[in-house]
Amino acid sequence: MVNMQSVLTILALIVAGAPIALLGILGLSALVGRRLSERTTSGIVQLAIFAGLFAALSILAIMLVNGERHIPIDVGNWVVVPHYHFSLKLVFDRLSVPFVILSFILCGTIGAFASRYMHREPGFGRFFVLYALFLSGMVVTSLSDTIETLFAGWELVGLSSALLVAFFHERPAPVRNGFRVWCVYRVSDAALLIAAITLHHLTGEGDFDKLMGTGPDSLGWPLGKASVTGNQALAVGFLLLIAAAGKSALVPFSGWLPRAMEGPTPSSAIFYGALSVHLGAFLLLRAGPLLESSMWLCAAVVALGLITALFASLAGSVQTDIKSALCFASLTQVGVIVAEIGLGLRYVALVHILGHGFLRTLQFVRAPTLLQDYRSMENAIGEQLPHMTDPLQRLLPERLRLWIYRFAQERGYLDSFLDVYVVGPVLQFFRRCDAWERQWTDWLSGDRSRESDQVTAVRDAFDDLL
Image (cartoon, rainbow, N blue to C red; front, side, top):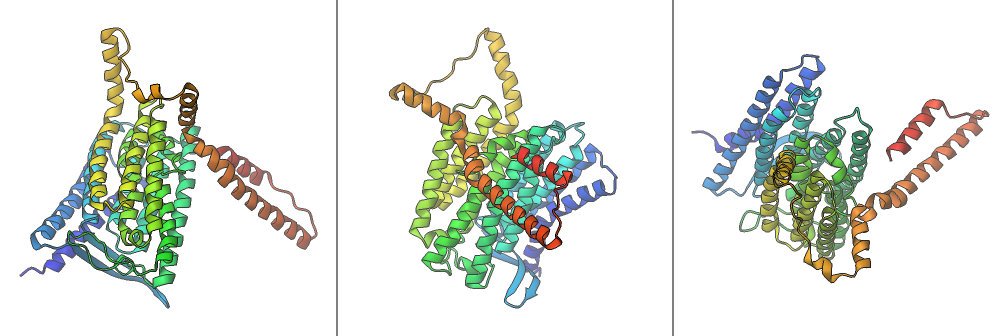
């Protein structure tokens, strides 16, 4: 008789191992200088997607047949030191399984689309290496049962996203925007890392079943009782909210999302429109017991979600290119999803994520041909198509309408706000520290050193990127 636990372990390893194997094959072929043909690359990508998706659907079927709601897979301890251990654990529950299936389906769709969209592109192989890196990060993040494992997947997603924004590195704008995205992600990653360290200090564990409770609810949702007090939950939850805001482009970090449109259309569709932008909401869903432990934290989540939705709705209404309009439309829905999570409507939020991911992927993929069809219709009728006017505009005074339009056109001045009040003071502080260090070393050496031209050039380049 076949051991069901062994079958589940094998299927779980296939789900997690398929994208990692894809990354290894594509990455090693590029490192050794043996470029794979476009047809071979596309075939390997589709094979890995099919294997991972089939294994994930098989686990879902087993869960439904056997009535399983929470299947942990313990791969073993990787690091064991006094007062700390890091174990690689995966979990299949009513949150992780839908999210990982969504990742495989959408990545498979975009993989097939990109194999034709990127045809004869010089960076064809590089695109699919970053694609595999992103898919690996999404799967690891979705299935993680420890906060360390989630952080590892979180980092892979951030790295691949920033590199894909800067994909066309022969032009200055993509590189500058990719650097912007990377800086925002650094803030998000730092908040998540501090939250992980704090939880370890408070509970001595990094496992979600120890941090968030072990008992799922009646429908199988991974919701128990947090093992921290209300004040501790508020502090850690605030850090997780910052991490979610940076990854999901919530206010005040919304400026990176339209900048991400510099990447190829397939990356815009799958990363910034469907999957990556929902990772912040996924983190809040996974940390549901922390939200339940603090009323103020729930209120902050709802307020941030509604503010983001309102801001994105205003900014999206004045965009002049279709990809920016779609990215703000996506951000509007993400804000609503976050508000749903704060209100405790977690099943509604999960269904909203799944539906919105499919819809937005289709819209981004359709966007290039939609513009061509739009122009063909205008040429056929000999005039521009009529535009819809918001009837609420007539109810507002003209000066207020102009102010709202200027505010939306400048995207809420969020980039300028971060530059002046966040980036500027940080740069000034570290430059002051650099000056103090040079004065100290000059005093110790008895000689006045001068900055080299290389250091000056690097500093000037850094200022230009900001």
